[in-house]
Image (tube, rainbow, N blue to C red; front, side, top):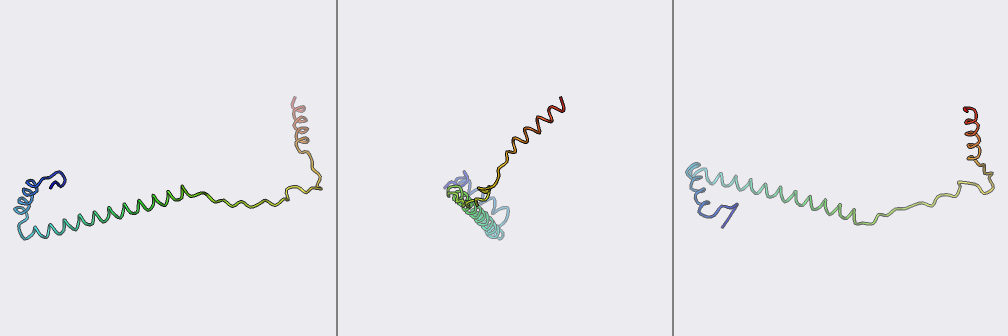
Length: 104
């Protein structure tokens, strides 16, 4: 029996010292409170581990699931077929040339 690196002879020595220090009346009470503390720690540890696994599974599911995107077809009203199209780049080029000539 080897708990926390402590063998049976060392465990017996610790129990004898605890019996001498706390007395036979207090020892069962201390044992109960120590047991409850260890049980509470184990429960908290298990709960933390379960929550961690649940979140990891949720994130993994989100990452591995394909992304579903719905794209709506745009309405064809950008230009009317019979509308007059003006070349704005031509007017901008003329404006830039005129400005350059004025500053020269």
